[in-house]
Image (cartoon, rainbow, N blue to C red):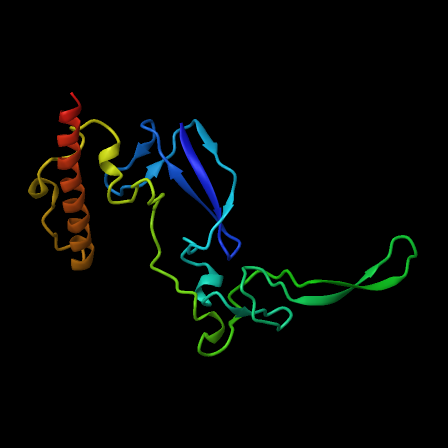
Length: 200
């Protein structure tokens, strides 16, 4: 059974950190895992970690922004929390009344970053986007997942065998990134085989 841990980010997006079971599928070329058909979820928890979405407008604005709808700021969450008055009809008296509420506009591409020097959010720093990351507490990361699934014979044991020679059709940065990932994976495969043999 694969177990999902939902996380609510400050931008109001939600991500899920998966803890995969042996029945989970893994693509050995990309390293991406897919949960099995029998999943369970923990209760959603708030987090201060970065949003994993590449197009998160809140993150691109540095975590502090001015709303394009009400022109108020700074907002430090994914939705505008600035007060505003709205006119609504009272269903009992049928009169129009002013009601205090919040703007509730979601940070979008038309909203602008608050301040010119990010003074209001200097304590917030956003790290690189993590692809396919799971909980670091339990030692899962995209580079170490491949040796946890399948048999011990599903991956080559030698770094030279698993590292392809760079082709002319690929860019040099893509092929060098692939080599680094495979060298790291193959060294982890060797260590997992040693620990596997010691268990017998």
